[in-house]
Image (cartoon, rainbow, N blue to C red):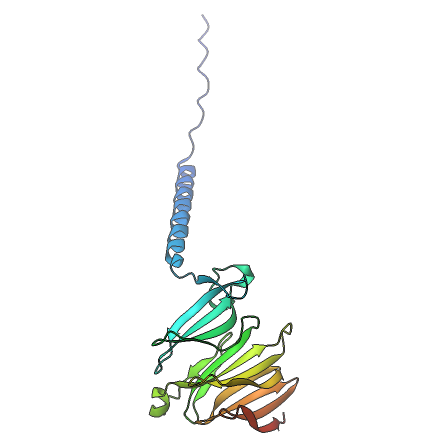
Length: 235
């Protein structure tokens, strides 16, 4: 008799390297899911609060709400979320107003009358000569002089806001005022930018500003809310 036919050829088993890659891939997917959940949980409490203005249905976000050192005021920064998102944060926001809250009475003071214009820079300075302010990408705050004890301890007393003109992305007006009263005004219109800010004296702010392609050194008297010195800087 002829020999019985052999059984069907056994299928080769997957090599152990294939199994190893499959396990590593599965672990990677699990790790990615866990990281996504963790990041979502960590950033949930840091999302800016969404608010609606009294006079419009436009939604804004509260970027910051911090006490102003040495005063009875709380600075509340109002912004619009970038790309229309009410939960965008940080420098992506479009700053529209700064509110000053009196912690005793609860009274609110708006540095801008409404939220229609963008604040490109904001400066808060003490009433001390030579106190300086440095500019960041969106907001400029006081940078206290490290060599002067009085300057380091002095609270902010004056402010300057560089506000974009309506429908103009590269033209700005400069608002000057004091924290102690509600008298403020636009002292320099139609600027191209501000490149330096410091206190010339306890009641005067010195600035280096640009009008078009021309550079100027100017001094503003805060009680009078007007420019008292203007000189062109030759390049």
